[in-house]
Image 1 (cartoon, chains in turn green, blue):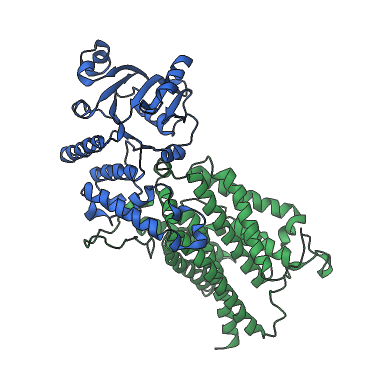
Image 2 (cartoon, rainbow over the protein chains, first blue to last red):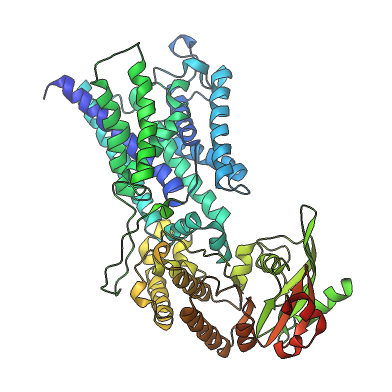
Length: 333
Length: 266
């Protein structure tokens, strides 16, 4: 394996890890609890910025060419953990505004608007996270380790994998417990869940905050790897890539959405690199967005449950008669 | 109106009415769907709520269940004023409703639909994430037994692993009743439980309701089929044009001219 290929492969693996964290996060909110979080990318961004300013040190460093708030240098892994805390806290505030009184369609609208507002604020209030130029030259975590460039790449792959493992244990605990069942009931019929004594607002707020925290952690893992983050990284359409990965992989299934993360943001995006450029410059990139949108529509139309559908929960001692598979469009409502 | 509210509170004492509704009013954009609903429900009895379409029955059920806020009036359930209580707190207090339109959790199995309805589940608490499965496994096994007893009773055991969204209309009605029972209700509000059900299954549901009544479950039944109302109910409340116009037993009501004019003749 040539070192250039190893470098490419390790980079892809870190991206895959980040995308897996991303789909688990949004799957908790959308797939399990039925919250249309079109502001998802904002929570990843706030995690990335938080980890950035907690790693960079004072903004007088590097010749003072960047302006940002906080500016301290905390030891690892505190910036990543605090990225989760800050993104979770932001989710709590957004959740209190958007989830308490509004129904799903309106929630989706509010989320989209919040995402756009947040981007405009960060672009224009330059003192916050260095405006449109964004943060850069973020030192790599554990950079003092005596590792070659390639050795560090593999080390970061391992760090990402460990993060994924911890997050998976948490996500699995939620989805396999009666708590996950109550969330899925809320997703399927909010009024009926309430009429059976479920505190729908509290359940939704909880999962929204947890999903937000995981999104923040995914942002932190990404920014500490690539060393930079700017408003260009988190346009609202980026949320749709994660959503498409969930729809393609299998809404509500933790392994399904992992497959979606591999297929959509990683494999699909990488494949377009190998297409020869044609037409005017940037045309292939633009078409990529159209194709991702099309992919989501095709799956919603023909395979609404995705490649690996949500698992049917069976209990010991059940009947031996095989139940029928779920078909038809009614399941997507 | 305040006198009737006082009465309502007094009659909510143990042994009296389980639910007292006084002076309920509700306006929807200038239209009064309910102008004056005042009635008591006796503990351990089946009371039916009847009336022509648009009489305000569903509005009353919605207000009592907590989905619709009243413009005025007061509701006392089991000795507590619940007028401003949220729907999920009412359910936890034992006031459970079913819906006129099927409201199953479509992507959960039949068994999961029942399990999720059980109150006070340890596995739904946030600390379950710290302790893991051992924190809720035992309770879950008990609930599983309870749910399967219900499935056997309603002859739905063979369907337990089926997605609720795949059930027939009648099976969904059964599921809804079972799910409400899992919630351990003190009072069950049944909003047209026979709507869209074939005659054979309707007969079966009637049998189940009669059995539940014999076991002492208090029910409020909203129903159009008067034969069924007469067979099942201990007393009947008649609504027309947003207000309660008569209460009594069905044979008695059949002789009352105002009831005949408002409903039975039409």
